[in-house]
Image 1 (spheres, rainbow, N blue to C red):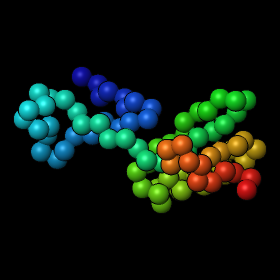
Image 2: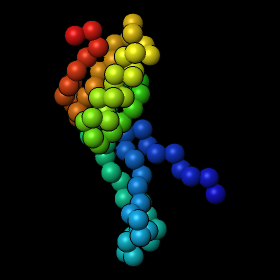
Image 3: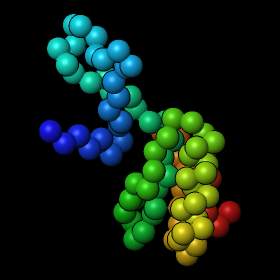
Length: 86
């Protein structure tokens, strides 16, 4: 059976020993703290998510290098941490 793709804003994770006995095989949902977002014409496109700031910053720097003319934002929840061009 193919693996399920994670939801855009949440990652599906499973502990090393499998799911807890009372979960009946369900996955735990872990929300990602940081998002790299490409902003174009009033719509946001999710580029990457991460729980770790250093990983998120590396993804942001890579996105800025790949798309230098596009507005890229690194967000933590609703807060914009850094925008490209600033």
